[in-house]
Image 1 (tube, rainbow, N blue to C red):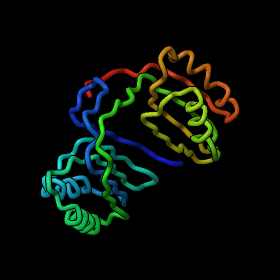
Image 2: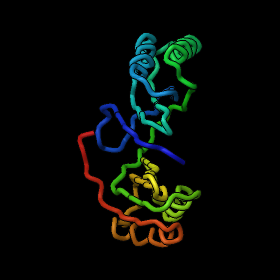
Image 3: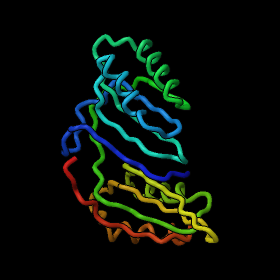
Image 4: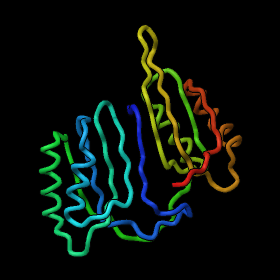
Length: 200
């Protein structure tokens, strides 16, 4: 798994952790980075009366990536929306754009409270090993950011940062201790700290 940076934008849904309902559509896209991608795709959504409820964008291996959660207007023509999104994607030179339905349901959103940082010499299996170790102690990954750092003449370093929601009673010191085993097996340095709250 490789990524270089990630940015995130979220709608004004409040900070309580409750999501009133999962919106009706997911739009995802990937392509060569250039100005105007977000403007072009969101322009199509506005034209069809769709509301952008949540979003994540970033750069993965030199490609701009976008994931949008969209609340569709009543009676929206999904086929026409898909056709217009595909036309916009072609004009923007994107590699792919997809739109699909998601089930509507109330849910409790996991609220992250800790940040886990790991880094070490790059090799296959790092993400899987760490994710498996977290899953085994019921820690929910809510955000994952990885980066390959390569300097001339040096071995590439793999850096990994995760926002996680631990189960009740598991603090940052306890989680760091729990992760020392997998970090040692993967030859990684690990640290865990509390996540600073913000206004989003």
